Image 1 (tube, rainbow, N blue to C red):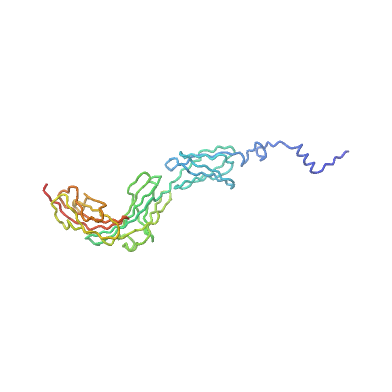
Image 2 (tube, helix red, strand yellow):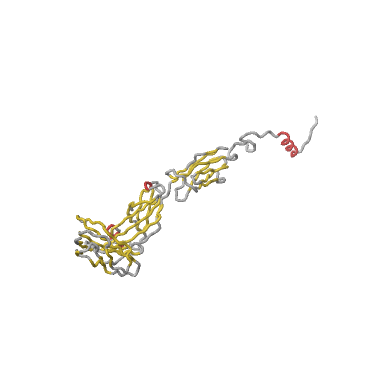
Length: 340
């Protein structure tokens, strides 16, 4: 018997050269037709909309693999459509985000060569406080108490999902006091809210307890998303009020366009006057029938430039500073009586 002696390295080389089996198992990572995880890419596509179904542009959609490998993504177009191409097979978490919207997530399992469509997102818009102002208003009146304050808050809120998605709007004063702000009006997806708080409903039933305190507007939607305004302050509390001079105290005037005169208001800051005339219609009610706003500070009189019919009236004069804070006179009653 003849024996052939071959070194081990040469034997292995010969074995691999002459005995290599064809690699056509689709689950063999070295096979050309491999269809196992992580090799042949697929795609993920869908649409991003608001809750009302409107397509949302510029949303970021990320496909985050469970394995911790590379992250894939796309940006939605003007119609809200997106498509993430060349995504290896596997399990992914899709995360969709857009400024001023609550993010949303979906789970996707992608098979090799799979074109996964219909992975849609409906994003909930976050409410926003676009502007918020708080002002003080000082009144002189003959009834008790003779001097009286109110605090007013005005807010402009945005909610792209519409008014019905707004759950609540609150005015909050540092220390825990809250008051509900009521809807006033709207323009597109912007909504105006306001509240007036008499001093006897404030903490301590006085403005003294809130001077220097921070005011905030809080808006919340029906999904529980919320937003807060920047801190706001009352810039000024008036301690003086304007005084009407003529006509007053039930004085009768014999012309339908009377002159209204008041005592000049002295203050070391900018302000304007607002003058209003009300007709008393019985039962303690009155109707605003004439007004003039933004009268400059040097003025101390104004003529009513519309005809007042015979009857009982009263007028007030108010000073308003550049921040919207104000002080208003007591009502000055008069009678109009003339023969046309």
